Length: 393
Image (cartoon, rainbow, N blue to C red; front, side, top):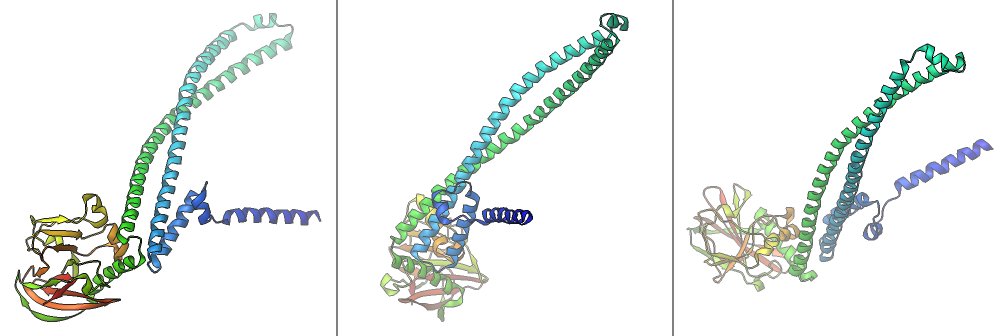
């Protein structure tokens, strides 16, 4: 019976340990009080972000992604701050110990050395004097043994003190390592705080872009998907004619012409070289007269441009830039792989011009509510220029 009780108790004990080991932290825990489960919460919330990225995109899911990513960064900041506080506490204690113990050891070493000298001086007392100063022979033997033990013990104490001093010298190295860790942690903390500010700004910009409206969000998403579908072979186009550089090839389409695939009247200009995406900044003429439709503070949201080529622009100058090429928060929200593959622009004139001699094609792509019209020009050097959201002529 006793063995059964012991066995049963062991099962209960193991089950309790196993239960604690597999107890998963919940989203509610992470939102309200992660406690010591910061690492588990970061993993849980990162998984949620990944899960959301594979679901059908909606305004609500995008806002949830922003909020979740912000929460992850806040947890990382909290974790970094706690680590920094602990390191500073440890280095403070370590510094006190090193100073106090080193000073104490030096004093103890001095005392022990003095005592060792004294006991060795005493050991030179003649055995006759030791015997005469003792009550009997046994007492004399005991005194001699005691003196020997004292000398041996003093040697051990001195050795231990020297070893302790050496260990605390090593702790000086540990203090330097902790100080370096503190500096690293401070740098990490600043980076995280900067990242958090950026994430909050991106969320606010997203809400302003979409105006917290699901239909507007879906329209922007449809535009991004249509643009990428067209330039990678999804459009339906036909050859129209040969064109020369500067020839008119059509006009920017009004929003009413393709409301399902456009956020407003503009030209999306894109460049491919030998079938692969290329940066339009490499081809458009530098020194052109252009401006942005948004402030410099929004460059991280919509991107910026850096034209340094020699081709003329497809619109009459001055040109207004609505979105730059590359990866920025708008692109990360709406475009596959987080990259806006062209430059969005408009002008006081809606006329679109060929930037180089080539063969002009006109086409369209079916959207949920109408069509997205476009042109492309293939050039003899393997270059293809794309002109989206325009009606070719």
